[in-house]
Image (cartoon, rainbow, N blue to C red; front, side, top):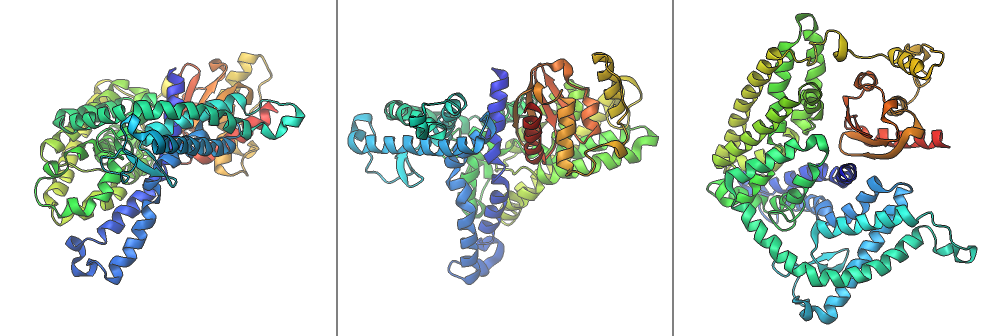
Length: 541
């Protein structure tokens, strides 16, 4: 069950990757129409304002169609085969379900407590999705129908029919089964969803009123669940779902950005719900303290090498919010430090919220410039200064705690390796180990000159070597990925190489959980997965 949840959570991240650019662009274009920032140049009706309003309209594309993006994106990560066809089927089945709901409400809406004549939005409980006026089931409905369609696809896509019925097999069969299934589900939905909407509304009020403790607990759970891959289930209902505001915090923040920025007073009083956008705050400040601790505690002869290793990963974390190379380094070596990190991240958010700062914070400094810093600098400069002031204080706290722990328990962080378990294995070492296990003649391919992948694309090289380290194509039973991790399931975990082998070929590490494994690849993981899947298919053929 855990493996399935991890796979589902990773697949949810596929459409989320599209939000980063549009989010930054949208926030920037909204800021460019703010008279607080640009004065009369941004007045309504000016050429400047009109141009940026057009840019803003394009930026809303992703957020106005989130349900459809998840419906299409989920099968890409979850389908066992022919994922593009699964995505097509998922879209058709989802829209069929919404059309059924629209038809039912148009005839019997009052019987289910829904006034279908109302305008979409507000308290109506209705939304227009793909041109269809339907119940606003938010991401919950999209994920449920996409998950159902993937299940049908995985079980029936390859079902062979008699030749005279051949036109109905493959994707057609998936859609046909989905048609009759969603007809039943549509009646169930119009019956049970309106009461669920009321419960969600009550939950939103509870979460918004939970104060600093609620914000801190939320951030702690999101950080501590990262190793399991289940953190997607924590933050996505807040950022893009109805957990705290209808439609998700990120779209809500964008939609009201100029209004929030121009309203005087405490940000926490203006928009208390935005405290649940704080799970990204530690991504900007934790790498500063952790990275400095790694460098300072490295052996003197390794300090320059450690600096060269830490600097790019720290900058990536600070600017783009990709912190996994840091987090998984000390997760591998000292899990207790990861718990400390989660606690410090929660305490940082708790402190900021207690001091009156409440904002949707982007995944890194680049997004924060447009999401928060520039829009709020004019009327809420105190919040911006608190963000940096408190954040840098916590960078110092991170440094001293991590430095103390590394030296106290002699943790083999980068630059402190000596011999034994912390060593980096070479390809020749791994081949020798495998040869002894299988009682075959060993052969040395440790030199890059003898590497048959040397002329290939770097991502193709990684894919081939990672597959080798995972025991070959016939050992792979499932493939998936999230933002930075290649997630696979294997038939025999004893064939999997040690963590050092994967680092030798560009990975940041390997996470093992029985037969479920995660290779920490980095932001190139979608490209690596593509090559990886092709190589697995070749070897299985």
